[in-house]
Amino acid sequence: MDIIKTRKLNLYYGTFQALKGIDMDIAEKEITAFIGPSGCGKSTFLKTLNRMIHMVPGVKITGEVSYRGKDILSNTIDETNLRKNIGMVFQKPNPFPMSIYDNIAYGPKLHGNTNKAQLNDLVEKSLRGAALWDEVKDRLKKSASGLSGGQQQRLCIARALSVSPDVLLMDEPTSALDPASTMKIEELMIELKKDYTVVIVTHNMQQATRISDKTAFFLVGELIEMGKTDDVFSLPKDKRTEDYITGRFG
Amino acid sequence: MNESLSPKRKVYGVLLQGFIFLCTGITVALLVGLLGYIFYQGLGHISWKLLSTARSALEDTIGILPNIIYTLYIIFTTLLIAIPIGVGAAIYLNEYVVNKRFVQIIEFAAETLSGIPSIIFGLVGYMFFCQKLKLGSSILAGSLTLSIMILPTIIRTTQETLKTVPNTYREGSFALGATKWYMIRTILIPSSLDGILSGAILSIGRIVGESAALIFTAGTGYVLVKNYFEALQTSGGSLSVALYVYVYEHGEFGVGFAIASILMLIVFTVNVATKAVKKKI
Image (cartoon, chains in turn cyan, brown):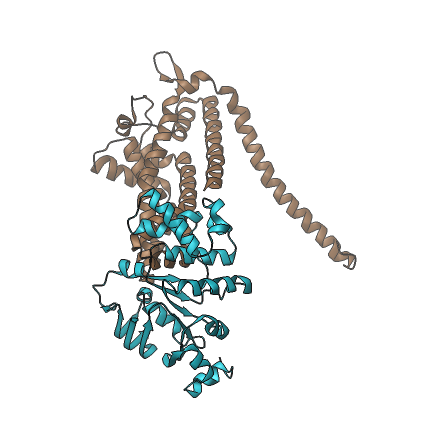
């Protein structure tokens, strides 16, 4: 089932058109990877899905974006609720300047859960969900900034999981990490798709082939091609996709 | 020194080094000398009686207890008024205003405000708070006047720390569904406590040292009243004001130096306390 749909999505930064008529369907409980050279609009597109792009001054959007049938471009949408359902993990790990525990409890508290016992459970469940529990269970009250980069990124994933999202958007989540940490996060993502729909922007084409079910290739604001990852990489329909994945530009 | 340098450059180097040593030496000597002189002249005049009693015309004794207490009241009241307003203004300027030109104008205004001589604040405070608002010569009028005086400092230091809070924190909070105010309350204010504290400390220094503006607005009262709220409506001289009054009007130089020593100790304590609190944060 398709959980997110966009139709004729155009996005402008002032007069510059960053997205051109994107039609896309994102399937539930799969990993969808967005690839393409820098500035192709893949991050912009990702941020449109949870309205983070609305925070950029001067952004104008036309077309349709729906999440489970709800029009998310509508001005009446409840952003708090939308972002609870569609979580996000950023390129650079961004734990808050507080303890590991408080980082995870931040989301549930924000959405009104103040029950201590429930919070404790949620913190453990989220950290387990992000394969971090065993590494940090003895220092939950320590500052999150003491963790390694890879651990911090898994903490951010745990933080996103803490509010039981439906979809996880990941904007190049491993680009700031070393290969070992990257591998851990990739394994984690494959685990996560059992329960969540994952959409990931990546610069790393091997990463897309390793973990994603579907791949979408963007170029200067257009969606050039989207399909099963194996098909896109072995039999690209479009010449530009082929040029990009074979490394002729990018 | 490098062996390959020519003799001329070697001499030049040595001379320059000597000159820099001399500059440092003068600075340190001035500081130590000044402190030493004040303590030498003042410490001997500090007695329990001076610290623990109010001035009595009947017994012809001098005590600065009211002045110590009024100084603390003025610090407390001024910060109580200025910190919320200053922090609020800084948050507004940094987080809400999109028009950069507007921010620049406000910043320029605040900058100018901080350059105005304090006696002018005193004059305006006297006309407005004491006369117009009929607060009379009182701790409250003095504190209100000083609040305006230190507002630029609080705004600037808070703004500086807000600017150092990485945008990724804000994004992380918004991405979890936080509203702007929730993000400010849970992320921004806690991470700028440090800067707010620095602003408060700088301000305490300024409040403790202020005399001109306070003579106009809080007066030179030395009668101890029962509680804080009564004091707000009473004329009360801070330590700096008392120093001026005792030396200039009574010729009590010993008491003057005693007060000076106490002021130094207060400033020192505040600095040490801040360092300790900062470490904890």
